[in-house]
Picture 1: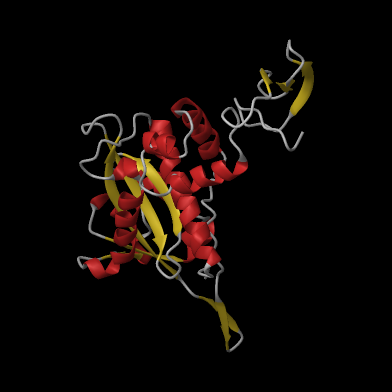
Picture 2: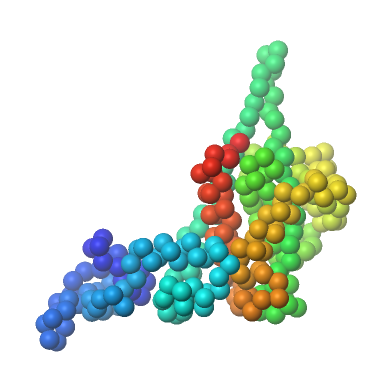
Length: 253
């Protein structure tokens, strides 16, 4: 039933299952989680309008408890909802790029796509449990190409490189600072190491945006990630929505 939604798992695969004892309210069964419930009313169900509001608030520097108070929904339901929301985010982060070519004297030339790479500090559970967020950003469109969360060493840099699309690996120009891990992973002929902030200022500006918009990344705040899964999911969700917002403004290559 498309107009009915299970309050436990949010599935729309629900069927009628008789009435309550007083025969005043419909009973339903969810075919996804197999739970039964009585059609209650305003307080029990969370409509699509409120879900859309929650989706927007998750991008606006509010803690989960803050969203729970503002909407209002139970924190237990919200935790369950974000796990499902984060798991459905596309792995490609909705990144889009079109390779530009030109023809001269019978030969085709492909323009290299300039990308900036950087890493930012974060933690899960306690400050000693550091998690570095590695980010690759397209300089022209400002879209985020890929990201990885891990240590600050060569293995983490290699994981970020694996997530970059093959076309960019072949036709990309990569700007980084002089952090040693990049030099051991990126192709030397297309890797530009810069001592000047101007060559990585766009990705560093995005790092600032991410830290200001994601409450779990704000410095000296009570909001922080308690689990690796939610830490990764929240950042992935923000980046995917960030890319979509840029595309709506027409900023693909």
